Length: 348
Image: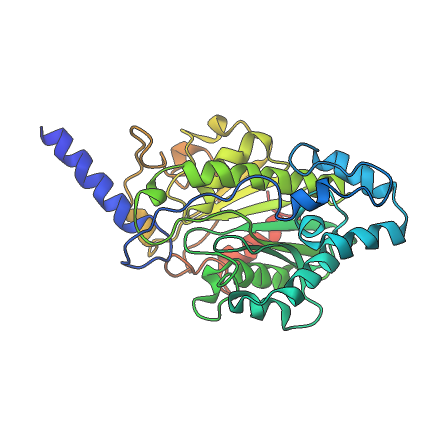
């Protein structure tokens, strides 16, 4: 009975604190956004070009990339104009076309939640899906010429409306990506990827893996699409609940390095259990409340051992001067310097 009571207390604590930057709000169950991009029905019915278009629900990113390489520039642009939401969200499409398509989609959107995404000229929006809470990815730097690439995967309470919010900047994918890009310089490119349905507030979503499983599929497709477009294999940085996504994606993820920070667990017992060829790194500072989360996984609840614990086997990222759960990318910290070295392939 006492063991059962301790288990209940552990999960109550996990439910309270694992939800990223959610504070003390009550969580709401979320429906994961899966499947092909919006507008797929019209895309499938389009025979104007006289050739069958790749099916967004079945074609691999490599197949999509081959199809677009076989088109002339006017043919590519025609698809951008007719189907911006598909072209802008379809992994394997050349990144330049995706930027153009998503700029058109944002210009056509009348949803005030996304107005800020289209205001600044020159933004490189790699993905924009307005359904549900909205999903978005933005690129800092030039993916076409970059020698080193990084992807930032956020944790809870992130969506298209707040992924670049101005408060708690280094808890957002855009803020983390900007800081990393500023540290690495022009030879690199960094993708801020809010491309999955994250948990909201406190609740069962934050301590289960259902949203992470859906996100893992979308993340692996992203890296497959980058590879198909000739982009170097990235270092993938996974914050908080995002590390659960990365842990589940690890066996199929095209990544050179996998870095978790402020992680509640990766749903693996150790590095070997991730079944990845990527180098695995972990950071956790002493003031991060994630350290109070019980590292357990029972009946699908909880996310398993602490990746920053020595016995997990990950390489250590120094984080002694980071502060709190969202301080790892703050300028001047040892952790940000280490993240830059990992991105540039200089860390050992």
